[in-house]
Length: 366
Image (tube, rainbow, N blue to C red; front, side):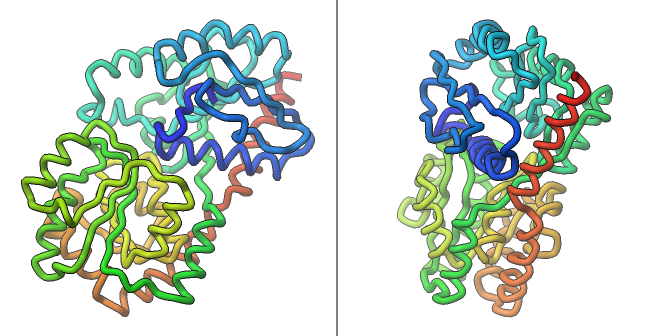
């Protein structure tokens, strides 16, 4: 878990924290050693007798330092503990590790959509990711869409890819119960997104201007990391005269996020690219009528339980916002169908699948 920067890596943090917690419930017969960095507290280690805390003297805020540590000093602890498997939660693996490895690849955006990668990140991705994939016995990913990209760009890894999808947190199920008991009355639309280029928030702002021509009472709240696009989006918000109507909250605690989901009239997700699309699953679980981009990973999650739009068309996006806030028959369908569909995604199922992968690898090495 050396890659994890609390409040700084978005959905990958939610995935790994939840998966580790679920493993504690799914596996009492194997021992787990959690290698965490200086920024990540011991709360990431489940309170179970077979989970052990291994804090490491490295800061994830410095990617070069973290990578150097992972490739060198981490190996000393791995050898000392005589680990059977090393599980890497964030794309990269210690390349000289002698133990078999399982590594999570959330997507291959740097290959499929290189225009969204910063130029100085590309050498890092181009060097370390293929090498980590080659050195890993299995590659874990979250969706069929991500699996297709992995197979396309790393065809030699096809038979090693394992699908371990996201689950849903009980907090969102509690939100759904609250919303059913007391439907929200605030004219508010919620989006949960890191402010990165591929998240397409600029098009959402333009669509919101169109939407407000008919529904001026509505506000848009965007929760998520203030990423590479933040300054440009703040300027665009001012240019569109939306400063009093669009709120960029930054990363917020989960309890605060649950409250935003409880209060919102609808949810929108305008992303052009995803490896999975966690916020859409969260919205379905919370019983919030959802409009989202018509891209394969989101179709995979939502099925017929969302109102889809072309992410490049602000008029289509504005029409979708009108539908999910005003069409009561559609809203009723999306709420009921979305909650039913979200029940397909459970952390317990994912944790058991991952445990089985670990045990197969260990048995092969025995």
